[in-house]
Length: 370
Image: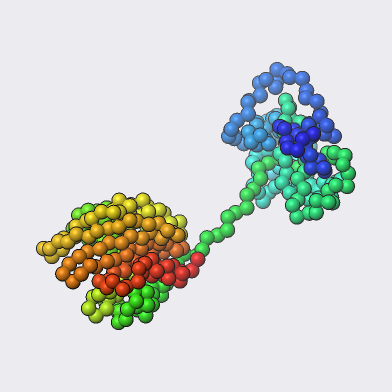
């Protein structure tokens, strides 16, 4: 005996130990090898056609090696006239509780038969082993939620009947969240009061709304840095499968503080996550360097800091100096459900809160139903 299975045919008794095939009550010595057996197809890694079945070693075997295999009756004119879905003839009924030779559907498979001598419930059937023409043996696994003390009534190994052969069925994964609808996007944006609090200021109001992507590729020839310039750049979202967007630009009366908050809708959470993964690969291409912005006949140089990917949010800072001072911005990108949240928070003022872009993106993500 052993604490673990030593190979095909080993079986587990009520004492939770494993025993070799020859100690099983149903053990039958292998039959002598015959020429007929040598003509049987070898096992395969995949099914080769109807009736092939999968054993405990995860290999596929032809129908004629199955314990329930019955040779087909001679073909007659009468049989050819019968529809394929008629029941088997009286002399060819399938055994109760046995699956057909073809791979069964999960809802067609009969439940496991109860074990007669061990007071436990079958949890996971052990699939049959084989030798030559296939001797079927199996054990039982004591269910975790049934008290183990009940399974020790006898220390004598007790053989159990083999459960039906066939593939096990994994439970279906839980359904994902319902996608956010296009009509719900506007309600997920932060209010001006919430933006003012996040930016440490007052008087910021909505100055623009957005329903389409921005194309700044002419002003920023360095395409790798387009995502660092502003949110919802057309080049950044090209080929991502986005379907709608809703955005706002907010500013105080003199332009010392500005914010862009934009929400981009995807068909599913999977698609939104895929876009984020691509962005996480692209953003570092503009990290720790400069890019040039040319607009209305003048140009300026932006300096980009490191790119961070923390807690599912991408972020980076960029800054620009002019006669008014240093204009510092934080870019932030995250996703929630099927929505990408794209934020730009900028200020000329040194006392503005750091991390405002990440803060705003996180507040919006918390409003998205998941």
